[in-house]
Length: 163
Image 1 (cartoon, rainbow, N blue to C red):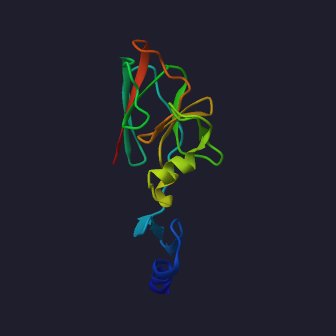
Image 2 (cartoon, rainbow, N blue to C red; image 1 turned 45 degrees about the horizontal axis):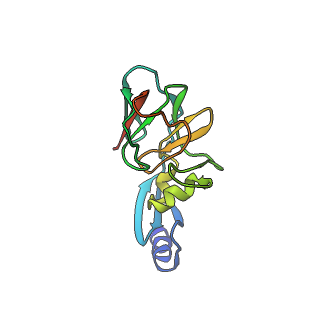
């Protein structure tokens, strides 16, 4: 039965569809590829201390330290700088939006993840940097235009590595 459901998914499924296989396993059709994975236990939100530190969050390694803001912050990439005030790391929630750095208008976080071709099954465990519920960064994908420290200003440098 499970094999039949996976074959049916591969033949007729649309990107983003998945079937549960039991024992915590799923098959997902994502961007033309069939992917098998265990369902994620999404880590709880974690506050980043103002001092230097690191942690494992889901399958991610997150490091942060005080640093001066560079002249230019890229919108994407594994490093971003933030005003050191109440920074948290959490997973995406329904309705999360941001205004991309250098862009206009609000963009749903889920759309950022789709554009980056993050499979649906991995999106719930993707780290977001937030302050007071406002999304500042979809880690490695899109920096928001809010709370960007000025060049040379004291900031918190956050770096992420997917595990």
